[in-house]
Length: 119
Image (cartoon, rainbow, N blue to C red; front, side, top):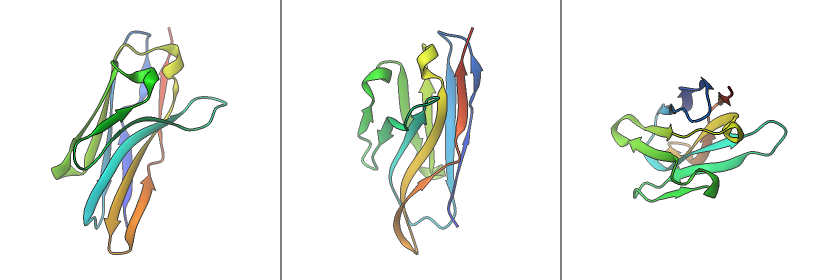
């Protein structure tokens, strides 16, 4: 059974930094895209950043230049380095991965980790 487990969320002041991690575990044959989404209070879930198996990255305009997504393929882990955090970055951050297991190719989600930017 595949699990995505996020870590690294917390409370940070504006201008601060955090690093989120997400490790995928289970009987994974192939890892395709891995990424991060977030859901601010009272709003819909939105894409933050994604990285393909080929290493291509895509970022939401609101985080370009401040956030960096990276992976450790050997560990099936994706990271999100967040710098110059703003109040509006406050959200629950969800890890997302497109994986192939013996059951086929599916999209998996983590349970989310809270990031709060507050002074």
